[in-house]
Image 1 (cartoon, one colour):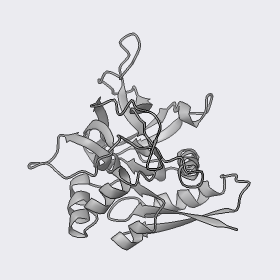
Image 2 (cartoon, helix red, strand yellow):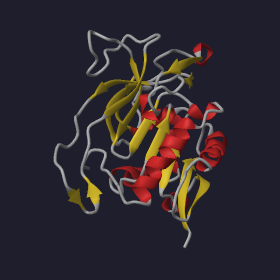
Image 3 (cartoon, helix red, strand yellow):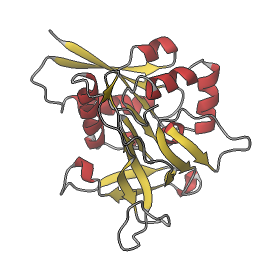
Image 4 (cartoon, one colour):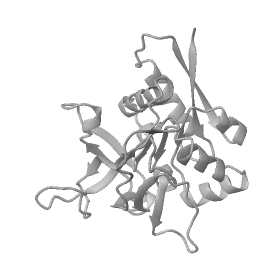
Length: 253
């Protein structure tokens, strides 16, 4: 019997098609002894969101994204998806902002967030779109000794503070494993002035990739490259969570 895992990309702004194209390529790298196939769809409605086992929130402008999501009746269902159902979610750039519990340097009046990551992000850390750049990142979660990932930064946010350590309790509650502290998975040291959490010898850098439970966020845009490694890695996390039932709460909420 073939089982389908449905992965959505929130299609309000940003590199939606680019993400779907890389997801399709990445899915060919997923080895499974069981009958497994993927379906990828653009998500604009609550019905489409309800069909998803996992979701990517792409880049764009986070304030506008939140306003549009609210108008479409998606904001609260997104919170339910992330923080109650604990389904795997990945936010890139503005998507990382949306998944943060707090955001600094927002527009006047602030903005609504989905939440799920116990972090405070700083929007537009590196300036305007004219100051976009590409930098090689050593991402150990892709495997030791791997070549650096060429990360595209466009008006990128960073994680400026981890604001909670998550639940320290263990065990299973309603089929969901309670976790989880925020893991720092990627640091950019080129222009960084922020202190890395747990850094040694006063090491400085900007936190640009984090994970907490089933919630993953990157400051940069992997979908704007031809490198499928992060998409392959994330799809494997999705398979673990949805096929093998390893749902992990982000913050015990």
